[in-house]
Structures are given as C-alpha cells and as structure tokens.
Image 1 (spheres, rainbow, N blue to C red):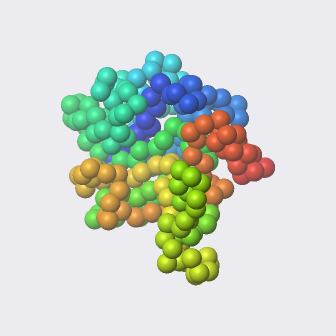
Image 2: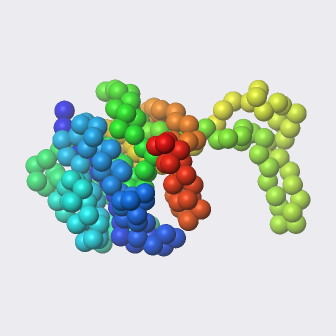
Length: 226
C-alpha cells in the first residue's frame, strides 16, 4: 500500500524568521522531521512541500524529495495544511502516482519519534479517516476562568466550581506534530468523529510559535537526550 510523508515548510515565518530551517541543537529543525520519517521505514516517499529554494536545497541534502514547489495559492500564511496536502496529492496524481495512506509531518517537531509514527499507522484501520497525537491539558479546563475588560473574574463552567479537579474528566489538545490520514475519507478537516489519537506526555510535545516556545523545546529535547 503506497504511503507518502508530506512535510509542509513554507519559507515565510513572521514570529520566528526562517523558523523551519533555524538551527536547533546543531542542525536545521526540519532535519528532525525528515530524519524521523526516513528512520521509520514506513514511507515510499518522504517529500517537503515548500515555496523556498533554500529550504528545498536543505531538504534534498537531508534525503527528502522536493519534486515540485508550492503554488502561489498555498505559499501565503492563510493557506491551510489541508489545502497544502491536497495540492501535493493533486500534483502527484498528474504524474500518475497516488497514495492510500498519507502522513503530514510538521517541520518544527523536534521531539517527535519514529515509534510514534508507527503507533499512529497501527491505528489507521480501513474505516479510520485519520490518526494524530494529543497531549492532556495540565489542569482540567472545566475549572478554567475568564476575565472581563475590568479584570473581574468568573468561571467558564460555574457548575464545576466545587468539583475536585481529580474528579473531572481529562481534556486534550492537538500535539501539532503529525497526522496520518486516508485522503479518500478526509472532507473539510484533518480530523473528525472518525479519527483516533495516541496520547503523548507534556515532555514529548512543544508547540513552537515564539522564542520562549523555542527555548522550551530545546530544554525538553536536552532532557530527553541526556
């Protein structure tokens, strides 16, 4: 069954300039995603979708394929991941190549592991649209607070004001690392009621949107590679 890894790496990044190829513990951060995908041995092809020549050249040096560059429509900061995936698959289709199972791997996920990709694929059964990693919120969101413009505070869900935190159900958020998917089962979202997840710990996940996030990711990487 043909499988494709797509690593979307746009050249423009505003909050952290050149984020996708910025040095992270001695190598471009995208290297960790490319290497994890190649190491897993799960894919017929590992490709990088980019609009940037420097990212293309670095990706090729790291062993990924860059068979075509992104169109203008998917090179701006409003293009969604799903739009990028669909453009990639359509470009391959024009070359008479199709893939039954696809994994979109983000380029700034240095904490991801090949073993997690394998675990995700194991859950991608015939009727499952997608599989992706999640991480639990550190505190029950049902006990969360909201603050108004005058700094007065109230609970989002006051009915749980006297419920012990340990008695509340866990809540999770997208880990922002990768998505296994079956293209024919995906409609307007990368996940739906027909999706499964694997659960990661906070030490295995770090969203990187600013410099503080970047430093935290470096700390977690160091702790995991001592």
